[in-house]
Amino acid sequence: MSRALHEVATGTLFGVALNYQGLLRSHLESFTQPPYQKPPVKPVLFIKTPNTRNVHGGAVIYPQGVERLQPGPALGVVIGKSTSRVSVENALQHVAGYTIVNEFSLPEDSYYRPAVKAKCRDGFCAFGPELVPAAQVRDPHDLELKLWVNGELLQRNSTANLVRGIPQLIADISEFMTLHEGDVLITGTPEGRVDVKPGDRIEVEISGLGRLANHVVAEEIAAEVAAE
Amino acid sequence: MKHARIRYQGQVHEVVVNAPNSVKLADGRVLAEDQVEWLPPATGSMFALGLNYADHAAELAFKPPTEPLVFIKSPGTYTGHNQVTWRPDNVAYMHYECELVAVIGKTARNVKREDALDYLAGYTVCNDYAIRDYLENYYRPNLRVKNRDATTPVGPWIVDVADVPEPNRLKLRTWVNGELRQEGSTCDMIFDIPYLIEYLSSFMTLQPGDMIATGTPEGLSDVVPGDEVVVEVEGVGRLVNRIVSEAEFFRIKTQHDTQRAAKEHA
Image (cartoon, rainbow over all chains, first blue to last red; front, side, top):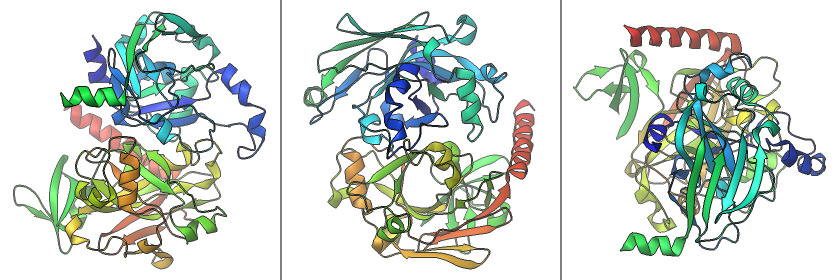
């Protein structure tokens, strides 16, 4: 099932940061101070490079020398039809469907500079288990997200709390860059990211989209396995 | 040797470039520079460096960084040699940035500086345009400044590593309508290419076709529709681009999209 998703979603993985109301609110005071000066005006975007791609059931490497690693449960929107400068009203016509994304990252103490070292490590963007066609998702802005670590529910939120909904994101982004067929929009991770350790089993569930499971493996062990 | 990607009569070709910028197709046909549509010579991710020349950092009133300041570009922002780039309406400052680009030729992970050049396919040139009006202090420089459609000309070709014996002694120059506006040398780079390959590959895998745009020296200035902007890296290439208005760009784009759709349905 996850095969079809990874055949369709072959484009660029675009992430949106600070797109949950609770998360943005928690930073607003610091965002009036240097180096930020004022809160963000437009969507805060980042790119997960192709080496970050990972699948349902895939191992996520816990890099050697890193102190903390955090999963990032998010709703993924797969673009079905290339779109440039689309209106909010017509934006959803360009969506093929939805999937679950686990956007792994090292903790971010600052949003000032691009978080390449934190976010672009190999395998740091798992998505799946499948592509659920847009027509089967009644309201993408009313989906519950849950994160389990070793079976324990540690993070819970709803896409009702997005700062910008999906049509607004597609309109804002396609104003300056085309969203291509197969691109994936990672709509944001809610506040309350948790730390995980090697050996942990991480699952993200989104209502109607299934459950995306990954496990964390220490880099040293992954290297040993690869060498065998 | 120089390698390029071009489109000719609707087909994409990998070609060899000979003097004077004529291209030779795999089947032996030879075409002139102005007969073909030049495409970006590589299409992986681009790792672009901010503030990687001490003089440019000073120009922008920044202290030189102690660790590379890297931002990422995705393929949608690339365009080829002799193409157009758009200046959005109602902005005050759009500037070019002439840069030497290292193109990755084989998968690179945990590569040491001494071995770094073995991982290159070669060098190319890019013009890393920025729309400074859109700068925000979040993941700066943000995508709206640096990852716009057709706003990163790359090319015209990739030059073999062996043909550029001293990559850290190359002159960089930008002309606007024939007037020299920017001049520098890769010898003033803060983090050189071997360092950057070691740095990036220490925490991620670089893939064939990925590019490292190594930053720009001082000498930035505003460009407007109608301007011809030429960026040149000595011994690597001379990349030509023309600025058009927002309206003209989207008129051309719609035309192309319609033509392509018609061909696909034919």
